[in-house]
Image 1 (tube, helix red, strand yellow):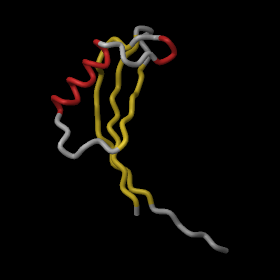
Image 2 (tube, helix red, strand yellow):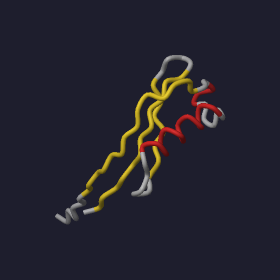
Image 3 (tube, helix red, strand yellow):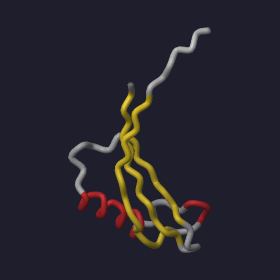
Image 4 (cartoon, helix red, strand yellow):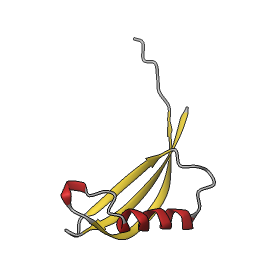
Amino acid sequence: MDTVLKLIMTFKSKGDKTVNLTVDDPKDSLTESEIIDAMNLIIEKNIFSPDNVDLKEVVKAKVVQTDTTEFDLKL
């Protein structure tokens, strides 16, 4: 079984659209304040502009853990 962690950061764009940015394998020691600082920096420096629309607001962030089990289905 493979376990994968992802940090999902959710923003609102100037077009009032919800935009998710995902970071694979965030460090275990990542703190809430580091996430907030990073998200604010993304907005402040206009680092990402999906579909040429600027991000304007931090909405939420979460770390998601998924477990994947693959089966070898030789018939």
